[in-house]
Image (tube, rainbow, N blue to C red; front, side):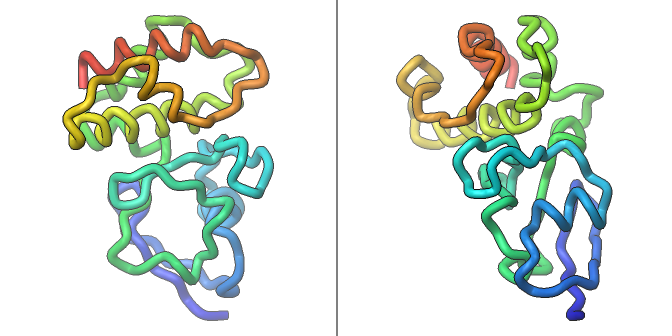
Length: 158
């Protein structure tokens, strides 16, 4: 099996795995990073949302061969380290707004929200309801109103 090397949450990692293995399985099964959740495996539910080079992506839809050694993959486990605090402001907003019920989708929701805030700021847009509507993460518990409020609150502190 060929070795694959990339940056994960600030550390260089290498795995020996076939080229066509999805990155989600590399993260969860080989590297024991379980924040990104398996929901659908076809890039629809977004439960696995993480960041690659600062942008949201879904590792369930990316083969490990497509990740370069210089790529920086950040999962929920490494998010707070990007701002050098115990919790990232978006994570704190989730706590403050009591968002989670079952919690399964929450890592993906938070990672998508952080990326959306950064994208909107780069485009000179506000984090308003229209921007939040662009997110497509699915929450089966239906805490969408609390998710919206947490995204807005987290954006204020980012």
